[in-house]
Image 1 (tube, one colour):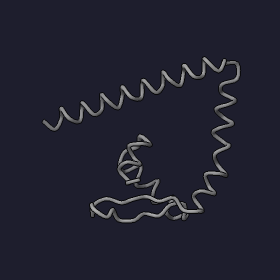
Image 2 (spheres, helix red, strand yellow):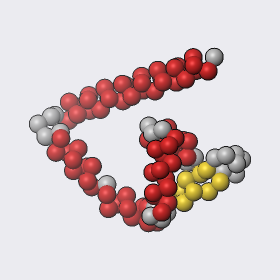
Image 3 (cartoon, one colour):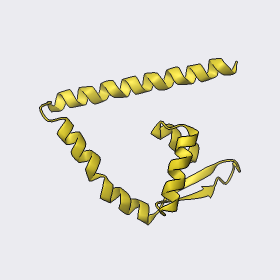
Image 4 (cartoon, one colour):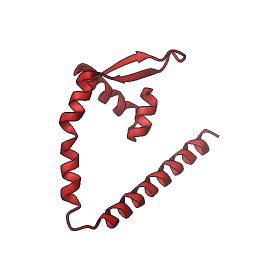
Length: 104
């Protein structure tokens, strides 16, 4: 994935994603390689250390999410997730429209 795509997927600005990538690279969790067709861009690759870090850390948000949803039915959780996804998509669309209108 390119650094730009990663920032977009993570909903982080360019500066923030660069800092995160720098930190992960120092921990040998990722490797950054120049994009083969775009010299200004980098491709980000997960290393074995990065895979192990994910395996180690993933249970934490899973446990927090499970605890936060105590008392909600499976349908309520699903509906909430769908609502959040809809809101996120609308925010992205509005942000994209704003960027387009500000460059015209």
